[in-house]
Each structure stands twice: as structure tokens, then as C-alpha cells.
Image (cartoon, rainbow, N blue to C red; front, side, top):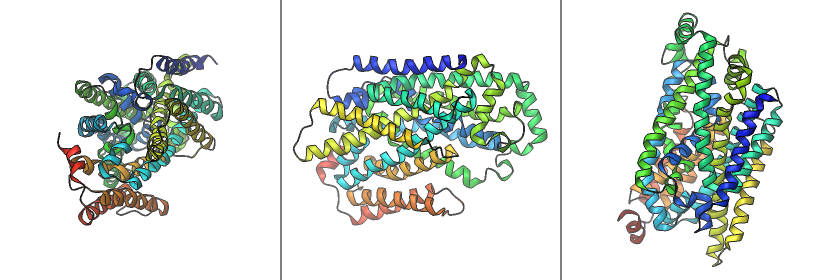
Length: 487
């Protein structure tokens, strides 16, 4: 029980933060306050919440487990993730912030609705967010609970109940501002966890030179870029798309551009976020390789790739510090869940219900919106929690499927919508719906081209359909183009 004390204190602090944030909640629109923190995030918090939402439990469990199995090839592939925060804020940050304030937009779907004037596009976008986010959140619940069970010896269900309820409670009560502040705490704990684990893995393994020297003798292929065939060029290409370039289209990242206070803060966030995410992703994957100093055999011999980091913690970290060591990976899980949960809730409440009522000429009372938002957030969290009671395997694969679906749906509609006057309603509808369906269909049947991940099919089909639709479709009206492009 003693090893759980640090974790329990941390979880209690997360809940306390949500109550504090609700108490000091600023005036103005409830929707703005609950879903984008009244657009008041400073640079440091913006950086940390973006990093924490992006860095999921697969980054701390599945990813380093693959690095343990594959070697430095996985680390070389993961380097592209360093660009994630810089790209999303650099390409969309300022532009999204300006447009959100101009149109009083609270969600990414709000901006797409204003740009394309399409209820079909907005509805499908909200549906895609809810469905794919549900898959990602399930993976986070499962990954966190498996880690908890493997390290502490308590049951999977106990871990799921502990942090599952905590994240649902603090997200529901505090909204986006609580998510941003707790994300900042989570990001700090992630870095602390990496440092603790790195120190004890190195100590147990005899240092970097000893561990790598042993590996160079026993597994020389782990030092090769292609890792003896385990890291083909096709995997590099698709992973660079999935966790690199195309991540600029992820709604959970783009919405951060709606929430920041000023341009100076955004620029600060780009620098801080790039440094932090670089340390996290390179650091934890390097720990995965160094785990050979404390574990023997391959990933399968240690219970699979998802079990490598839990086994390394149990083997290398002193028992009295285990409670501190697992906070980092669990923080990655709960920060991603909370970030996705608040965006998914906004898709249901703002993009569907409030918009539907406004089209009928009905204003939703602030008290109704407050209760509906809290209940929707809680209900979605509980549903995903229930699904996670029957855990799937290979967390990172589930995560990558959801990433690919969201990127296919939103990448070109955002890029073209915000930067090309020729983009129109038909092109956006065909691109989002057709590309997403093509991606899901090829995933379902296992169809690949040149053994490339189906994101290459989804993103290509989405692009072609956008160009075809924009060529044959009706040109966007001049007033909309003026609002979007005449700054």
C-alpha cells in the first residue's frame, strides 16, 4: 500500500485543482470558459497542455517497448515527433486564434462550418471526433490500468477504477482550464518519471557504455537504421506521417490555438513545447533501449512490448520509489484522456446540440449548457471506461488507427480551408467523408499498398477528392472569402 501513497496524493491533487478552477472561473460565455478556458492560456501552460495531450500512454509504454524490441531504428523514427508542437502552433496557431475570435468559434468544427457553410461536413466532423477519440481514450485507459497492475501488483480493474474516475471527475468539473493546468502538472511528472527511470536503469545496467557494449555484441542489428529488417522504409514513411507531419490536423492540438491569450504566449509555447516534447519522446524511447541492461531476451520474453517499461520499473526502481516512477506514465494516460474528453464533449454539446437549437431560433440557457456539458463529459468518460473493462492488446496500434482517422478527416479540410481561396464546400465534404471511409475500409480488410500504413491511402484519397470537388463544385461566396482571407 505504501507504494501507492505518492500516486494517491497526485490523483487527489488533480481533483482539487478542478474544484479550485471551477471556483475561480472567470465571467463571460460559459462555453468559452468551459471548452477553451476563456482564451486565456499563457505560453508555458499552452506548451505543456499541447505536449501532454499529444504524449499519450503509448508514448510511454508501447513506444519504448518497441524501441526495446527494434533498437535505434525506432528512436530515429520517433525523432520526427519533436516537430509536432512547433508545426501545429506555427501553421495553425495564430490563424485559428484570429478566426475563432472573429466568428466566436469555440471548436475546430465551428471554424470549418464558418468556412465551408456545410452542415453535413460539420456533423461528420463532430462524429469523427467522438468515434476516433473514443478509440484513443480506450487505449489510454487500458494502457494506464495495465501499467498500474504490472507495477503495483493490484488488479487491472483497481487501476482502471482509480485513475479512470479521477480523470472523468476533474475533467467534468473543471473543464478546459482544469485540463490545461492538470496537463501542465502531468507534463512535469512525465519528465520527472523519465529521469527517475533513466537513473535507475543505468545504475542497474552498469551505465550507458556497459549496456550499449553488451548490445553491440549480442544484437548489432539494433544499431542499424533498418534494424535488420524490423524497421523497413515503409514503416519510417508511414510513422513520419502518422506522428509527424499529419499531426498538425489533429483537432485536439488545433483547438489549443483557439485557447491562447496572445501571440507572445504562442511563440513562447512553440519553443518550450518543442524542447519538452523532444526530451520526452527521445528520452523515453532511449530508456526502452537501455532496458536491455535490466531485462533479458526480447519483448515477447518479457510479456510483450506493452510490458517492457512496467517490468523495467519493477526490476530497476527501488520499491519505495515505485509510486513516484509510475506517476509519469500514468500522467501521460490521464492527460491525453482529459484533453480528448473535453474536445469530444464540445463536439456533442456545442457542435451538435447548441447549434441545432440555434437553428431553431432557441437560445440555450447558460445553466442548461453548464449541466449538459458536465453530464456529457462525464457520460462519455464512463462509456469509454466501461469499454476498457475488456482490454484490447497492442495499445500503440489502437492509438495509430485513431490518429490516422482524425488526420485523414481534418488535415486537408483545415490546410486548404485556411490557406486556399479555391477550397469549397463540395471539395471539403468529399475529402473528409470519402477519405475517412476509404481509410476505415482499408483498415478493416487489411489492404495496403507497398505494405504502407493505410494513412497513405486515406490522406491521398482525401487530397484527390478535395481537388476534384473544388474543381467541379460551386465557388465559395465572396463574403466568406473576405472574412477568412482579408486580414
